[in-house]
Length: 344
Figure 1 (cartoon, rainbow, N blue to C red):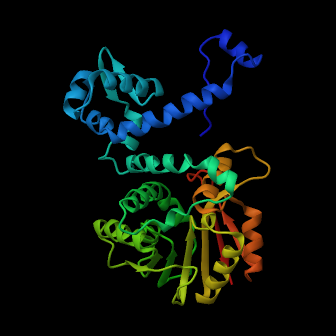
Figure 2 (tube, rainbow, N blue to C red):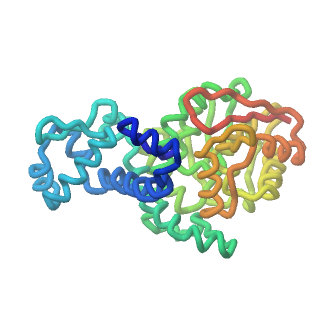
Figure 3 (cartoon, rainbow, N blue to C red):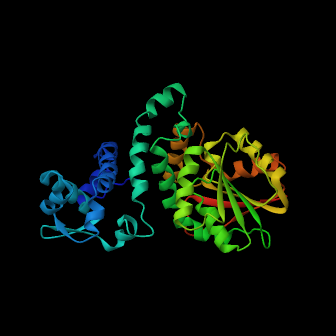
């Protein structure tokens, strides 16, 4: 995730080594440009059109109703990033990028790229948030706002990449019957677990704007008989129960430490004996220099007044909430994230 200058000859390497080149200028200018170019490829339909076959800038502009000169500059920039291949005056989507940028691909992430238009707007308030300490809560957007479809679908596109491995690693009691997915939105982790455990029925508890999109996703997958949705606030509303498993996936980074402790206490009260609490989230490391964790921490401060926390934080909260048995599950294909299981 870290933006890097890639010098093309020894003179540029030397200038960087001697601190003669202003790296912050490149980070600000080109980092901003890279983000907008990648997003524009989705929003203007470039990737989808080139997934059908190679085309020149002029032909592509005519098909998509764009300016030919501007289209040429955009295609040249995408080719420079390695997303497109150029042969003569024709551009094509690179084979290795098809899995991410072809809308027909089961691993398409284009909606997540579109969702970055929303995130771009949030980042424009960064200085104000840092000056005043007043972050804004993205989860207070009215449920009818189109934002929710972009948001939940974007999270679904990422979740379906991780869900198969998470479902394999997570251990629920033998022949589990009931699962609660807190803030599960798209419901895809719950659906993956239901496919792995034939006896399992899942309930996703989330806000109204999220639930109405999640229902659509699960219905299209033919899983509505196994995964149901309930509108509510998991910090305040009755959680029901008892459950053989409770998922807190991508939740704790939206909450304060005190809220996390209270949530884990509430979960303990609704788990059946031998039931499993599972926590999946991004974690910061005090020992490793991971720029993505630092940026995510700032992002969550900006959008939820929270942060990325350390695994030591999580273990402390679990103990404070009464959990005395927990372990980390190794994940190989889910970067910057860790999966924890806890039992009573």
